[in-house]
Length: 469
Image (tube, rainbow, N blue to C red; front, top):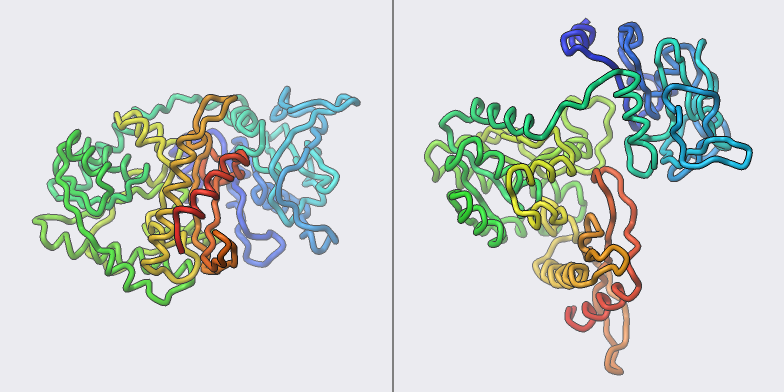
């Protein structure tokens, strides 16, 4: 009844059932509230959403193991079957026989093996005979692949078709509306209290700072930020700046710790302890503001997300202690990374700041495998600096953009292993760093960047010669 009332109160025009890590073949796995299928609005099930739709409406689902098949992860080519409103005129190419083909991203273990009554086959692959199903009369659709990820080339068109054409929704939301609503909410929440904002120097926390500053002006206080960003905010926004060096405290708490989840939680707890200690020196400081965005919440399997699996705890979500006396202010919590960047531009932040590669809140602590030591951090910091510098200095002749612009995130990773080499006719026995570079739009899924061999060779040569250890 609560869901029914919510849908009606929101003037809901359609429902999307998302994917998830559970299996409908297991007992107590999540199910869509039955009322969803009785509201008379279009329903679109994606991956697990399709499987629970099929199960609840009279179809059958089986696991890959029970079918004697391997689970399917990665690219696939889907053949459109029949004619449906969802797929009309949407295809990547046609076969010689005239069949429409879509290049998509699969990520599933279970499969629908029998269609529910009144449903027809909409798509298939050789390994997944029922990759899509449709009940056109009720406007119910299910896809086994993921249209929401950029790897599915026509995914955005499929979602647009469902939202705009089938559900008859209008795209009348703009970022200016969000700014207006967020500023109003922040003012109402904070009142005359002071706010402490922890900035990593990354995009999310910088945009959060600009948004909160627009709402409350000089009530915003800043902690532990890189000099470039500190100077920019202090000079351009008139924000009060406090710098706290807590390196020894963090390194001390991380001594001997190797598990990445444990490191994230320790860092999160230490962050709050530093903030609470500093807030005691500031009159009326009652709020801790963070640049938490929606992918942080998803990957941390945030509270109230029954059935969600933790990918990794973010220090600002899963790592916060429950007994902190500061209240949380997270104005970006429902935005994805690309939306945060759009917001940053709308708030007037410099493009070079908005387009910076993401840097994790826990810093280099989660880019050092195993125990975090000061000497490891120094080596990694130097190697990472060389990698980023060369990405900025190398221009792709086709796009005329730097490889820093062409990659979404790039960084070095310290590996706690040593390897034997030869330099200057002498033996070396030094640590190893790995280089990672990816391209993504939503920062939920990513593909490795095809960096030129010449660039990788130059980076490798510089690191070997300039970083000793």
